[in-house]
Image 1 (tube, one colour):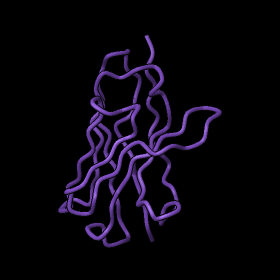
Image 2 (cartoon, rainbow, N blue to C red):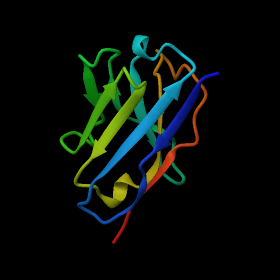
Image 3 (cartoon, rainbow, N blue to C red):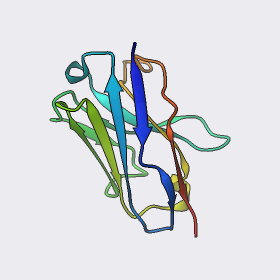
Length: 118
């Protein structure tokens, strides 16, 4: 069965950095683009960043461009999100999944909480 295990979240001060990891299993990871999403309290889940299956195409939400970097290691079935210059508005639960044309391919994992606060 497909499983996503997100980790690396925590409490950080504004301007700080975190590196999130998502270990995927149960599907042929190298054949899928992967995305990071986030959901803040009271808001809908939103797309943060997407990386193509072999990493040759990357896209970011405007709100994180220049601050976040998505990467992947296909040998480890893992996707990463390096987050720099964090802002209180980045506070959310962060999830990974494989994006489909209209949604995502698989059920969601438990996510990892990121809290940016002084």
